[in-house]
Amino acid sequence: MKIRSYSIFSALLLCVATATAQSKKDSVKTVMLEVPAGLRVGVDLTRFAIPFFQPYRRDATVVLDARYNDRIYFAADISYNRTSHSDSNYTYKGSGVGISIGANYNLLKKQIPKENFMLYGGFKYGFSLFSYEIPSYTIHSTYWGNYQGSMPSVTKTGHWVELSLGIKVEVLKNLYLGWSLHERILLNSAVAKSDFPPLIIPGYGKGYKGSAFDMQYTISYLFPMWKVKQQMKLK
Amino acid sequence: MKYFLLIACFVTVLMACDDDTKVCDLDTRTEARARFRWQDPNNNNVEEDTTMPKVTLFALNKDSIYKKQTGLSGMQFQLDRLTDSSKFYFQTDSTRIADTITFFYTRQPHFISAGCGVVMYFNIDTVYSTQHVIKSLVISSKQVTEENENTIILHF
Image (cartoon, rainbow over all chains, first blue to last red; front, side, top):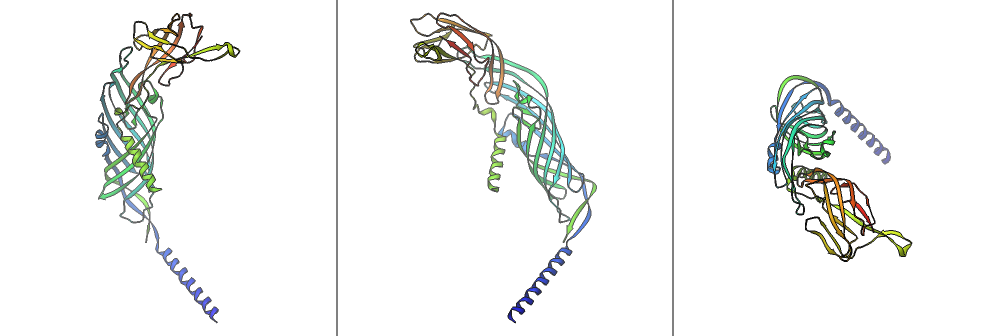
């Protein structure tokens, strides 16, 4: 009798649990919403901090992205660099521009209609046009005497691919803050291995290295221009 | 694990921000190297490394690089950065006749790092020596860079 009562009670519990789960499942509705999208324009604030660490560099980077659909954002970075260095070994002058173009993929599933967070992975191709010169350099030798020379101005290009991972958060209406990590791999590494490699490749980083790691901290503003359909799960 | 990743990211970002022009952590010496070899008559004329009793070496009209230095099995010396040849006076012992060794080469300035600047690479064309004490000379590496490879082998 005792066993029978226990079995009935267990069966009832199972039914209640199943019913509750079913009602929860039914309450999550998937809807398609049209959300504002457009061109997001920003600047990389870390470029303004670089001269404190690397006084020979002056950089500026504008970041752009435009939402294509639910998850994909087309993205571009436009960079400018001017480099000027002088010490007892050599003097260096260089300047140029770089652009990287690609796409970011939003890894977050959106669940709240007014939530505009983004955790993304990205891939870009980068191109840079720059010129530099070494107006004077000295090879020191106490035995033979110092050798002095110079390298005239040359114009070169840099090509690289870039992987990135980052977040963007809407802090005020249409105003976003974000940070991201970037790993860049130079495709024409002959530039970095040449007898006189550039100190900086604009948009890429240290021009005498085959790969460059970088961080961005961006502030950007979204100019709503169109709408995209977005899948949303509403509770 | 997540703390390790955070620290790794932080260190990598700091390294990316590093001022490389302030630090020279490479060996900037680009020097030719010579090694002494001889055929040992007590060992079936097998060729082996040897040491010289009192080595003197200097570039003509310059100060000594080695002055009666004992027990050397080789030498390390700079080539002239200002011209495409260097001529050295070389004596293995103060009682023996000196030889001269002449290097002909092309020079190639090479930027090695933001902190170290430019060094001179040499590409050896030919090396001659008189044969008073030196029996023969072999070029073992034509490139003289900061890698410090052996440039010539002197046979006695």
